[in-house]
Amino acid sequence: MADREAAKQILRAQKIELPSWAFGNSGTRFKVFAQPGVPRDPFEKIRDAAQVHAFTGSAPKIALHIPWDKVDDYHKLAKAASEAGIELGTVNANVFQDDDYRLGSVTNPDSTIRRKALDHLFECIDVMDQTGSRDLKLWFSDGTNYPGQDNIRARQDRLAEALAAVYQRLTGEQRLILEYKLFEPAFYTMDVPDWGTSYAHCLQLGERAKVCVDTGHHAPGTNIEFIVAFLLRAGKLGSFDFNSRFYADDDLMVGAADPFQLFRILFEVAGGGGLATDTDIAFMLDQCHNIEPKIPGQIRSVMNVQEATAKALIVDQDALETAQRTGDVLGANAVLMDAYNTDVRPLLAELREEQGLDPDPMAAYGRSGYAERIVAERVGGTQAGWGA
Image (cartoon, rainbow, N blue to C red; front, side, top):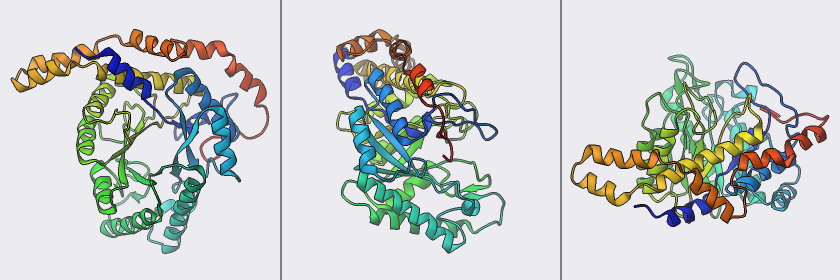
């Protein structure tokens, strides 16, 4: 049987990074619904992220998005995070919202616009230097909508040139994390459409270039756990963007649409050593809290990842390996299903109590009065959100 104490040790060390933008106003392409109490600047986002960590014990970092989280003094921002009990994490670049990027950023046919995009990526590395962040995450909306619109091979050349320039600019332990997306906003070709494209570019760049797997960025039916297993085996899995989808890149709370998929993914992560206490994989939420309250949405998401992780950790590996070795197909599947169908909430409640936390983070946050305080305090100013 799986060792409960060993599972608790791994869960105790688990770290899930929070996205700053999830605390601002966000929505679908049709509507962004504003909510009272939403942060107006990165410092208030840090305060909110610290609440998630305070009640879950597993969210000690907040990722930044530049220029959405641009400030005059990043040392001051890092100090504010430290005083709140968390750290600044991954720096995410934004080369998809300016009008200049209508035909792409680093793959744009116009060399002037490509230079503008590259300068922004260098600016993000400057931010990393000031915050001590390890990872620069790159997602490009670059692509084409119509056959013949641009030369597909030439766009790959431009992409490779830009990535090489960024990689050379990194220092020390800094890493380049390349995200991919099947479609949207380009619908004929995306320049980084899948994990294979990202993997190929990262192989060419070097050891400190890794792939980011966003769970919502795949075609329906894609076996994401296979991708995870492959990249872990190759040493090229750099980070996760956890969310959930029904149809496309829905950015719903992780585990909401298909909790069994989340379990399968984390089972492969565990099997490949990705949950070891010294792992260099960055686990991050990347979600859009459109109609649900922001902070509880993040708390629930962290809890969903914890539950899926706990189930992955209690799989009876000896029984599974025996069934696999003897060709017992149904027996092997039953071992996984037994773990998935186990109620791990008592285990996690026990763990939280051992950490000095409330066993029910959602209820504890609700009793804290924090939601009511920020609604009363955050009056006036401009709320943070997409593009703000």
